[in-house]
Image 1: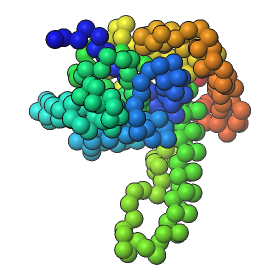
Image 2: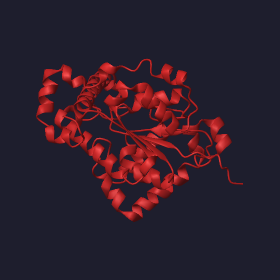
Image 3: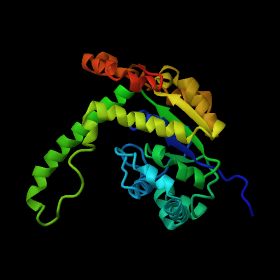
Image 4: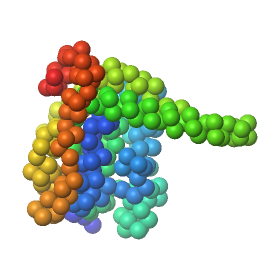
Length: 288
């Protein structure tokens, strides 16, 4: 018998370091199921691995996304990849996202009857696949000033190098036995501010291009606007996600939102100077 209560997912997209983690945590607090087994950026490992697998089909990665167009343009490979993802989501592997109790209840992701979704910036690149698999999915896109994004990426890359250097010399003597895995830096390209802001531009172009045809099923949120009006915007998002959240719950959820995080680059003369050198990139998306 057809279950008329089956819910389509909420898919959150947006460039890395643009507020996706903040937003998905707030929505989870209001009742949106966003998965088990999440990593530190609140991305469910189940979908993170699937997105990385999709990108690998064309040799793309989160910080080198342009090659992903080869997958989207090759119907034969695209259809195979989509079929695999669709199959995989209905296997016991889906317990990685649902948890075993929910998996035993739903037996996959196509029978969920509660508000659910997931966040992963890579969704911005792979969204066509997810919309083919979930034709009535709703999409939340959040975007932030490109210089703040680029600087945050640069800081994160530097921090990852410091941590990697320490771990490398600590474990170096054992690498003959168990060769080193992984990279030394989160992203070699994003250590450069200019490359970071160009990557931001590419993500926003992908987002604007992919979602232009889905009408009312997408909400476009400017990060800085959210920080200025967190209650009003989160309340609208709760309705968009079919969450039964009261005004009191929404108010409680946003009480720690920091308005001072908007346009943080303006407090740094070096970043201000950088912003003045990339006006054509920023202006494309209404920033300066």
